[in-house]
Image 1 (cartoon, rainbow, N blue to C red):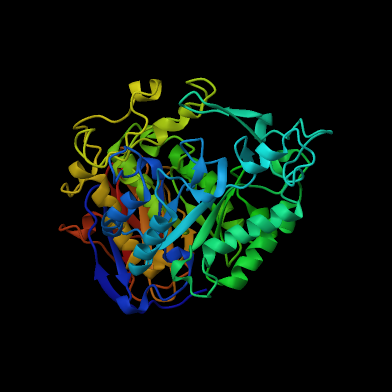
Image 2: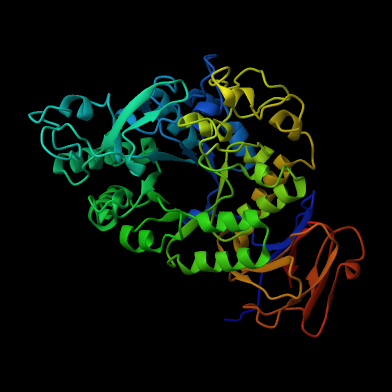
Length: 539
């Protein structure tokens, strides 16, 4: 496909390790689409974000108090970890699916948060994990060793007498929490009709709580945790995507056609069958995240291409570089500021929906233990620590719920005056926080980067990635140097899907642009500094 670009051209400078330059449509023409790619997600681990009442537990009121912060950064959608009551600090594996954890607030506080978000034209997404229950859930408590219980068939039991409930994934029959509690757990029979009806009603309630067809008080979408077709690969609860999840999503969309479904595919693959069989709107681009962390050009390109090939035309992927289950990106790159900024570039400028994990924007560090501290969920506390609002560890609102509870605190990543805090970075124009803010602003004001197509372009340098983002009115050429050497790269433009109106690109840097770029017979020759990032306006 080939066409002439017709656009209003403007220039935006991104300070730090990169400069960005692009053509822009008039602002009124942006954000009219309902595409999820218009969103900037911010993933909050609720207990660790902001404490509003002094009990050191992050809470819903704390999120309300920090909506100005999220909006200043450029966030449009908030994804929360589970809210329901649980023995566990992460709130997976509930005591009650319908009851909000009292340390987070009340249902009234939840609806107040939803109202405040919607007033700001922001969205809320709930994290739902419904495959398991623990021993204090009424279904388990009443039915264990009691075949006559009304909940006897809600739990998947092996043998007679309800004495052998089906374990969770990895055949876990109990879970140990960071505070020493050991809680029994088991698997729910999702094909029991009463169970199905219960969960379908639960999801519908959060979409339209009062059932009046007005969705101002309804959640905008769900993240489905640990979703899979054959639950835990045991062959006992199979064909879930087509027989349980898709019918649910169909019913939810009949209520509100704008509801968005995000699937966390359990095996962390490309997810083609989840789109095709489960009809989810978004999946997490797990393979791409791993490729980005490698800083290997060919791996990034091939994985990105495979990701986009696995994604149907009307679906998309969440592009992320860290979450609550994996090592923080800053730890992966040893807090190297230029690599952190390149990670941000991939996160925000690749095709898909950007998702930022709380603290990522200031370079918080953390390694999940994978058994470092024994068999306990405390292993993951280092990647779920209190958000660092201040230059010092202690301050109003710091969510230090895990202080002095174990080795994860003794080895905490939180340090005074280490440059990793909102207080230290907001006033520093070259900080990571400001880099994220500018990248997000760039994306939100450029339709080609926001919702346009993507094509990786051939060049002659093994350490430089070049790709084009374009739509019918704009085009932007992104150039990323993945190493610490000065590099020259020649970008092949013979197979561009757009046509130059003028055989020229422009780059604002305050110096003679010929020093940095020139046309050759095959394409464009560009000079790059260490870990340089540029976005050019194509004319």
